[in-house]
Image (tube, rainbow, N blue to C red; front, side):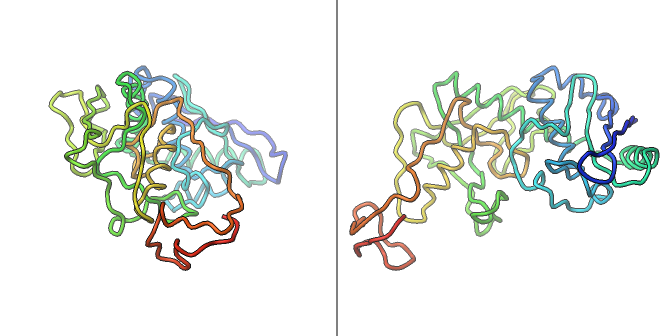
Length: 304
């Protein structure tokens, strides 16, 4: 199924293997799916396989462990965003990936890579779910633009991250799934046509698939064009919500917790510069009841 050709690795001992596989060998319906949203679908396919083999930016060094299903510690497994990349590419006809293999001879490197890739069992349902998730977010952004909205946060989404240094979602509990207030004017139901991808749209908790056979229905909070103020006390989730909105311009993988949240294509995030000097300012009028000393009523003299 996979064909390989190799070149000497210019950076270290070993070989760079370029492996190709026909699209219809990966899944019989992939050529039909690519026709739905070609660029988005091709990126989703490439991203799926990059994560499956544990790719990192400079190639694969743990290919055999990744193919055995062991957890990869590469950056591909951490970052939830789906971007175009140089180490793996999907066209309408084939998938091409570049891997680094430490073998003494060219022939043994090609045989090692080809044998491992050919015995690699790709869960077709996971692949199609990855594509469906990406296509849904892309179509959701078009929906927002057409309906004069700028962002959408789905009910049941997990917005907080595991830590400030991690992109992984926080476990729930303690994380509280997002829910738009039932009496709010911002509560909105999105209905999107997903066609043959609908069976692979893994809806989040409490969401319906819609009455139409090809339609996915998601309810949440829609932010309209104009000025929207986000207010609340300390540690109430204002910044978490803002980070979710700013990240909504990127497609995210299934399981990220924010895969049903999106922001219009042209959105940008603007914030005040860090490191501004603050001297003797009482900010209790804006925020109070912080869980850390010295609180807000005390005058402060520090660099924020």
